Each structure stands twice: as structure tokens, then as C-alpha cells.
Length: 127
Image 1 (spheres, one colour):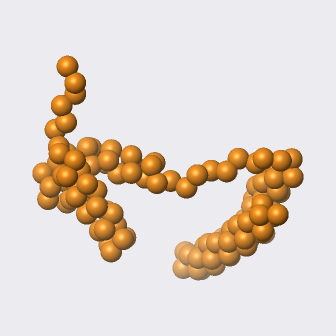
Image 2 (tube, one colour):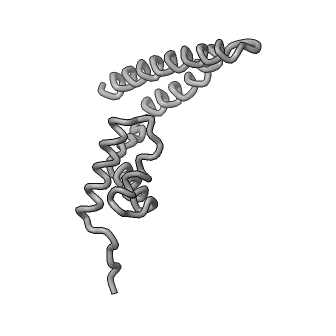
């Protein structure tokens, strides 16, 4: 006997679209799934499963290194990241406000470094 679906495909699609739309417009709202589940009268865990399946289906594909040169680049990037964090780690104990400011600066610098490394990898992998 085949499995009978509790919710229609239309309900799934609308609820999923609503969650994605609300996540985009309300990024800090942590109750989106609960509220959407209530709105569409579906189970929260069912909705979470649909979201996971959607995210898995739309996840960026991980590219495996094809040549030894690609592996060397990947290793160099992996080795450089911890060193960058160590360089920025503050010495001694800072006040909590100062610490937050330092962490924000560190995040900004790490994001910039990440973007630079991505661009460098894209150039190297394109060749």
C-alpha cells in the first residue's frame, strides 16, 4: 500500500515559498517557521523537512580538486585561514564593548580575506 501524503503539493509549495519570502524580508525573526506552520495548518517538523529538502536540492555544488595543483591551492587556502585569525586575535582582556568592536572588525577582515581568496581561486581554476 503506497504512502498517503498528509498535505497536498500545493500546500507544501505555498508554505515553503512563504517561509523563504519571510526569511528574506525578516531575517531576524526566529518564529517564521512556527507562524507559517500555523498559517497553513501544517506541522512544524513537516515544514522544517520541506525546507531542508529545498535547501539540499538548491545547495551549491562542491567542486572536488581535479589536479595536484588544485589540491595544493585548496591546502594553501585552508592553511592560510587559521593564520589570519591568529594575527587578528587581541592580546589581553578587553572591555566587553571593546571586544565587540574588535570582533566586528575581525569579521569584516575575515570576510574580505575570504572574498579575496575566492576570487584568486576562481582565477586559478579558470586557467
